[in-house]
Amino acid sequence: MLDTTRRVATPEGIELTLHLAGAVPRAMAWAIDLAIRAGIVLAVMTVAAQFGQAGWGVVLLTAFFVEWLLPAWFEAAWRGQTPGKRAMGLAVLNDDGTPVRWAAALTRNLLRAVDFLPFLYGFGLLAMLSNRDFKRLGDLAAGTVVVHQYDRAEKAKDMPAAPPVAPPVDLDLEDQRALLELAERSESLTRARLEELAELPTPLVGQLSGERAAARLLGMANYIAGRQ
Image (cartoon, rainbow, N blue to C red; front, side):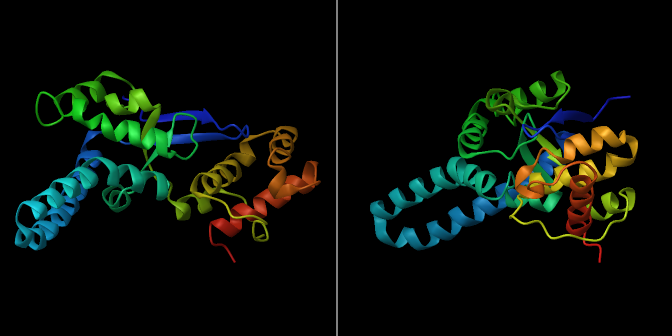
């Protein structure tokens, strides 16, 4: 059976399980994004057509922006998601499980021009079917991977209950996932290993160590999962 999960270690030393997205959900996300981009261009075209050649110049600039730059902007600003990916529950991450940044998002989106060749993303589909992480050429160049988002409700079922504790700093999506993943695996880890991992994110646990640090992180995981 094809393995659609990968385990990676974040720079903070926390292990994540990535659930890789295959061609079908990614194609559906792309179709949603394409419809949105086409709608934007058609709306601009309707207005710009009234201004002759100057208006068509605006249309061409708009088409370039929404086709090549807007998806990259969404992925960098929306933590790896475009509207289509958000609708399908997908997100783009770096290979180490960290949130994708502008440079990687721009690289993978510009290379869609190559992935599209010879037609209908032929090279991109061939690349996805040829590597275990379902990466198209843009992902290989940018060092990114497309994954399914975690279901927090399901994660909450698997983690030990603890009094909820609000994180002292704002956590992005990937930091929240890391905490949920650690809490889910906590009962399969030795106590020493759990406490060792709990001491790593100092912005969250401060000077706490050992059992107190572990209890604090479990409390934050319960808070993120929405437990009262």
